[in-house]
Image 1 (cartoon, rainbow, N blue to C red):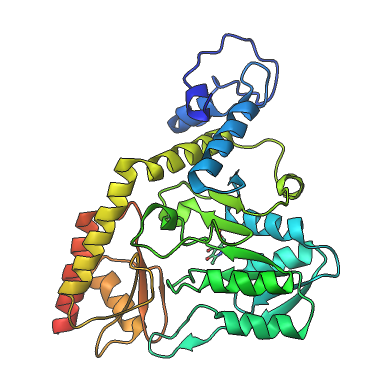
Image 2: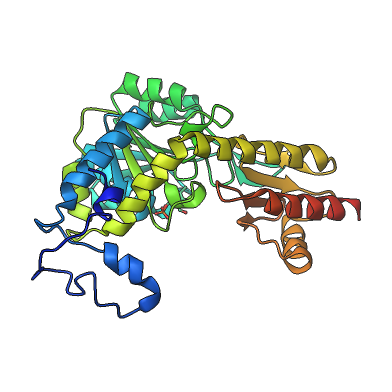
Length: 348
Ligand SMILES: Cc1ncc(COP(=O)(O)O)c(C=O)c1O
């Protein structure tokens, strides 16, 4: 039984259980359907069994040892991964400017952070990925229990996670890949290689690029550690089954011919955009992150012009460049509007 099908079943049992809206009492009518699907772990519904088999099917799709559905973002996946493989007093190698969940995870585990720096690409003013040699130097110096890398970076630079994994293996350290911004990678050969089958733990946000609702995400486990006890420590005992069901549907869609075609179309549209904006300079290794520079514009000027003149909002900007995030929901119309705006601005 899948979670999606569970909601199709009519249930005649009179529930004297939580939630007290009983799927029938709608305080906020616009969300009626959400209330209908908002079930608890009752005998009548037994959503736990459906969740368990949905997660097992997901692990088969991704080729992992286990894949867990998260309804508190990649943040919770990073916390659970660190708590799973690190004990109090252990050292964890993390990037100095990493997302705050990395340092918080280390603190939660009672471990000690050891920081590494990432090089900055001077042309675009953004951090690039981390190389295996830097990790090797750090691991040669002291006993590190786990390493966390962010690949891709927010702006779309990927690291050689395979090479980093061999270094980690050599030194007996676990590797955790923060792939929050790379949830489409397993579903296209034209995108960078995903870490899901390389790192010991990989965390992906479905809500960032893969069409998921906020804050749906995945924790993939590729080693022999059972991440469930750590997840139980940080997760509610009353999960949102409507959100969990969207995760099941999300993965099914990404893995379907329709989903893969949608990603391929997105990539084609973005290739055309790059080809037709000859005066723009593009950076990064992930075509779905439009990291762009225009002659005569600072990143902030470009961001401001796109917003005020073309009603286009970017994801993040710095002095040198601007990044516009694309994902499965970025349609041809939107790409065309951006292409026109960039062409016009670069001709002024
Ligand atoms: C690199 C990176 N990792 C992790 C996260 C946390 O993701 P979530 O918002 O899904 O908890 C973010 C969020 O912006 C991020 O940019």
